[in-house]
Length: 206
Image (cartoon, rainbow, N blue to C red; front, side, top):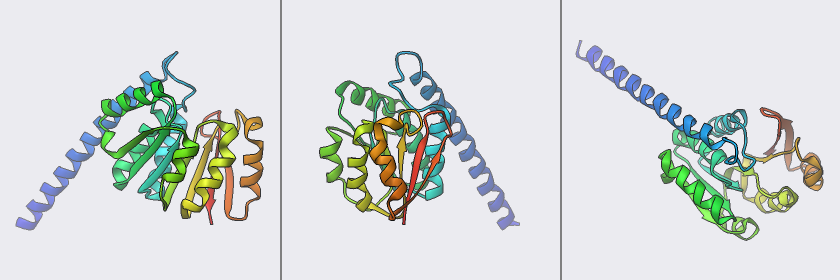
């Protein structure tokens, strides 16, 4: 009987925690929606793409995630929502002071600052400083530099880890060399997916 009461208590605690989590997620998603308002988007992802990244973090059980190109923090917030459940951390790099400051404020506003290491600097200089192994890398900076980023991060990503790049459907002409590389490199298996109109490449490290 006592065991039964304890079980009911634990179930009630888990139900309350789940309810609180859902409320928190709704509050975060409301903030995300305001970030997509005209004049504030900075060519961010859309909500379907953000949810795709969050779910990818969860499915991978990712603990160490690197984002190249923070912008105002939209994609970082989505990934950090997934990292809450895995106990992981996000390192995100942005070179523009204004976008960096906006991102940090957005991270603070949604209560995710503790799991996000936001860094200001040139990604081509900062990414080599990030040690591996990494579970997931998201490339969303200057598309013409994607091949350079890929070559830097590939040795840092664990087997079974994933390198994702944004805008592969909307701006393929700006990353032709990168797209050719990920589709021919024997070290990765790549698929192109489109949860939103801009498109992702998803390269699993063998």
